[in-house]
Length: 293
Image (cartoon, rainbow, N blue to C red):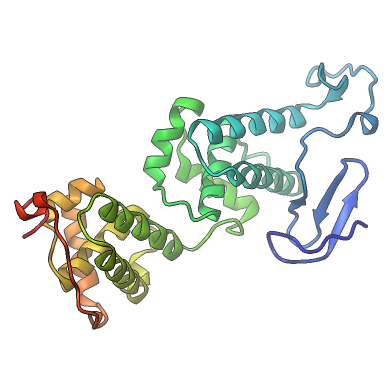
């Protein structure tokens, strides 16, 4: 038994050290604690030559690696490459690798031969899950487009649904939190492009999040970037009406029809408008009517 302070996933102190693999595992949620290694140290792996056609010798450590370990090692390599190429937060790689380990451990326990995952599917799914854990503001479509050049085309939603058969929704965060992250991203972009000032950005973002919490049933099962954009547009329409539908839809890159429809739903169940006086400083282009009604 190896004592650790606390599991980073579930907070449990109940952990187990596995001498065969050299890993410390949380007994509560199955998370591999500490540094993740897909191949055991050389002194723990037999160096005898295997006659199995699904094993190969690692030239780096001179040990025999089974096919399952080889897959995980390849996925770990792909994860590191994707994280570096897309300039994602460094912690994304560790979270993604931990997710792969948990998923494959659960698959071995349940042993359902009907569901399998390819190397590309595991890479895409694990990085996407890690980004959601970090509340990284990126939509499913945007992520799929960015990762496709590295791993090929993967139906992310279907892959995630198949993974839930083994691992459930333990590694997922709520849809409301994802929408909140997108709202903050949109408001920050409006502020950085000098479309609204810092004060109005604060008021707008805060009120848009209130709209989402007042209508949480609208969030479930829908694209988080579209719902976030609709909430921001609805909040602006109730506070100051600074944005036109067409131009705002182009700015956030969503369809104007859906944006308008969801914004109207948010408006119908909207909480009271913030009492803070809104002072908006427009740039010269805004005075020309690009964003101002």
